[in-house]
Length: 335
Image (cartoon, rainbow, N blue to C red; front, side, top):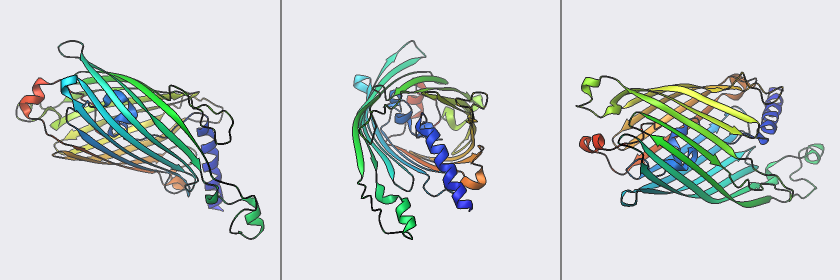
């Protein structure tokens, strides 16, 4: 009986999500190309980002998301280029979305201490439903028959998807705005019209360097505290992630809250989602992070078992201290 309640809870939340919410990462800065295409090539060094998210691990048929992105800096042309591959599965693998996007960003100097970037993302997406992964009423009536008598076929749709964003930053602060699905593609699997709403993201933060006296002997981010936020809006739904990171040598600890309980887009939507806890390890050119979402909504953490997320970033060069002091680099977290 408990499993039945879990299935119903997942169905209700999925129906709510279909109207506006989109897949996401708790470690949104570890997926910079997905957050804002203006981050493409902003790391100075070429890099690879890997992300995996298992949302609501305690509910069969939850949400699983994978993302791989590669970006490269073209310093001579003040540009960055990249490629992003994205896969999302929901409902016992019955519904899936696959994206392949090409990325480009251009950087300009606003003044001596502030830089600006603008980026675009363009590619193709495929949305697919596999009816063989579902159990229908006639199968239950026939004592779980091997297949439905309705002989439903898998259905899929392909569409072009575009995004754009801007980013302004200094060595201690940053702020950005991006818009995904700006062409509002038709994602209907039935031949009708179901436009994917534009998703807006506003993000930013500030980094405080601790132990200023030691800054000359170590890189500035060896000991720091950073506050950061990411606000998202799609159709009538919105969400705010707000929290802080503490960085000491190789270790990063983070905690933030997701939700806007004072704003309810619908009567029964509480908009009080989760607390997120992060631990990260930074060794030479590699960064690895793990985060856990403690569910606060009516689903409860006892039913969902929370959400797990892993990230890994590898950069192909390491800046010297003298180079770091001369450059204006984005100071946002890497997780």
